[in-house]
Image (cartoon, one colour):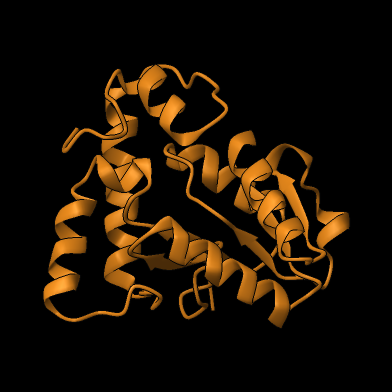
Length: 185
């Protein structure tokens, strides 16, 4: 009746898995590739694409690693899509997520990546150490996803242009003028 009781389409569901270090994240990506050999791994930055492809090659694993620029719906039909990092600008990220026409997107991140360094990832990592968290354990919770979105929105609010870059660190430097090693933005 007039759509009052229909569920609203919430769009793409983003499932964040966050690790303390990039090394732990990459080990988890290797494990994911072994578990699901048909998975497609997608990176926002060419440097990340190259790094993951080298890792898979070094470990003798066949996996499809793509730049988001080469991702299209036909190649992922029936396959899981795993993004290996977040893009700092939420609008661009959501636009790409929407074009792949899948209900859920998984994003692997680490607290020592550029996006998290700008919003206190080192403080979170120290807290997790105090709690005795295993470095290889991934965190997933709606509060984490919300914190990531808030960080992206903070960055987007301060920018007028999105300059392309080959790595997250270069993107942060070019677009924010702040080193990815900075403590806060």
